[in-house]
Structures are given as C-alpha cells and as structure tokens.
Length: 239
Image (cartoon, rainbow, N blue to C red; front, side, top):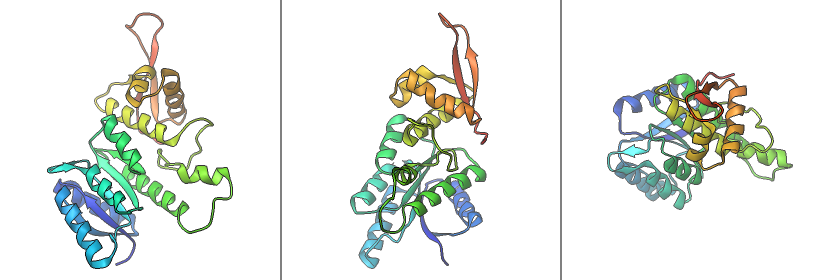
C-alpha cells in the first residue's frame, strides 16, 4: 500500500468511514489510523514516535469537536513535537476563535460540514498542490514563488488573488459566509468585517472578489435606516 499517509481524527463513525472512502476514491492516499478521541490520537502518535522515531503521518484530517477535548489540542501537540505535515480541518466548528487558532497552527484547508465528495476532493487537491509546491530543497527564486507557496487555494484551485488580498483573510471570510448562509441568511460587509476582525471596507473587497468569482450572490438589504446595503450569501458554485 503506497501514497500519502493519513491520520483521521473523527468521532462520528459514519463520517470517518466516508472520509476513508473519499480517500480511496481520490487515490494516492493510505489511511494509517482512525482516532475517535483526542486521547486515542495522542496515544497513537506517541507510540509511532517511540517505535519508529516519527509520526509516520503526512496528512491529518481533523475534526474539532471530540468527545474528550478539542481537535486543535492534537495538532498543538504534534506541532510542538516537530510535525510539519499538512492538516485539513473537516468540522462543523465555525466560531472565529477556532478558525484563527487553526490558521495559527498551520491548518491549510478548512471545510465546514456538511459537504460531499466534490468539495472534499477540491480541498484535498489544494492541500496536495500546496504540499508539492513546498517540497524539496533550495530557495524560492522570486516573490511570486513565495506568494504561490503561501496561497491556500481557498476556492479549490490555484486562482490568483487581486493585489492586496490575503489568502488567510479570504479563507476566514469564506468560512463566515458558509456558516451564516447555510440556513439561507446573508451577511453585510460590516457583519463579515466584525466576524473576521477587519473593517467594513476591507471585508467588502473580499466579498466583491467572491461575488465576481460566482461564489456568492449579492442582493440589496432593505428595512434599515439610510441607503440600502448589500448582503452576501454563499452559493458555493465554483466559477
């Protein structure tokens, strides 16, 4: 059995089985372990290091809400022990504090439940492209190569961001919209800015970028004092 070695940290059996099937369908991945709890993940990783001298894991599929703790605690311990592999968060957690901590700990893709195979495959490919772009030795030859290395492909592809837009902020805006739009509600630029910690003007730039890509719909919001403002609703339809 060959391919990137994957640790799945997920307490819901059906979801865990589904991720295993998705990995097989995508090809090039080997599931090495399934941890339904934080304690099991820590135990597995400790055993791996003790017996083999390394974690033996290239990619972690990480749920945040575990029965005995937070998924980020697993990642925090792995990072402190020297883990430099990729992490794809698959979770229903959409609070901004969790998202900020996930970014700080090097989570390169964040996919909000529920989702299907197409969304999973897009994010998995984005993780693979990022990993490939950072592999090997040597140095980046230009600012453009450095920018490519930092780009998280938040829309599932290698599309270039307009000047001044940051991939991490775009990812946070996307998660905020996906969370709010699931029940059919939209957010204004001011509401998105408050959620991700940016100004209304800055948030609008990211929202308009997503609108131009066909990932959100934009409609006027009436019933508020003054001029009507736009609200943005996530559609998830790739351009």
